[in-house]
Amino acid sequence: MGTEIRYSVILEHSQGVLLENATTEQLEAFWDANDTHYFGLRLENENSTHAQVIVTDVMPEEEEDL
Image: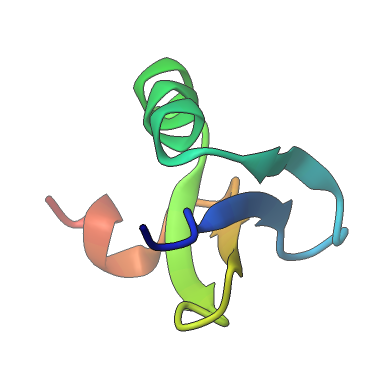
């Protein structure tokens, strides 16, 4: 049995932690509740047991054009 990856969601400009030590299910619920407020930028340490999801609350330019 493998180790479940845990996730923290971190706001890029302030380094504020929006979600800490969450399961995949908790991460998905966070996105479902906040997908209009935060935009994913990158995943760091994705091959470890605790990955960081770096997000922003500023809409990226390419999404503004859509």
